[in-house]
Amino acid sequence: MRFLSEDFGRLLRKMRQDRSLTQQQAGELARLNRKMVMRIEQGENVGIEEVHKLAFALGFTLSLEEKIRPTWENARQYFLDDDDD
Image 1 (cartoon, rainbow, N blue to C red):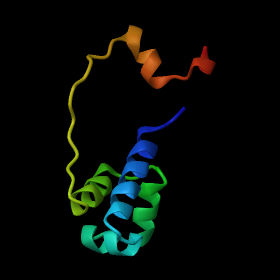
Image 2 (tube, one colour):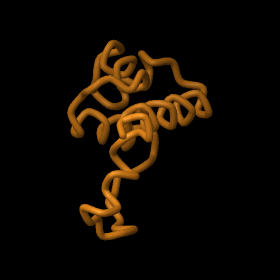
Image 3 (cartoon, helix red, strand yellow):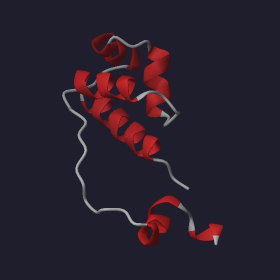
Image 4 (tube, one colour):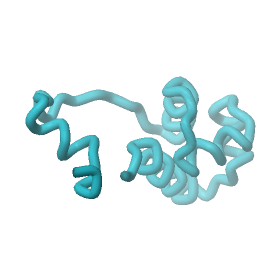
């Protein structure tokens, strides 16, 4: 199963690289240490506050937008692999 944190991590890494910033430089802008930037980019389990700080430092915001209203019937397709049947 792919985790949302991995998607965020890949996206934030690309944003950082597009701005020609090192992890150290991005961390300084976000007031995070380089190791935390690395953990975020690798999709590790970190707090939303740290992800928000990095995204904001790179010129982005995080927001929630309701696309569907989850039900028990459709939750399986979003949270479980087909192999889990």
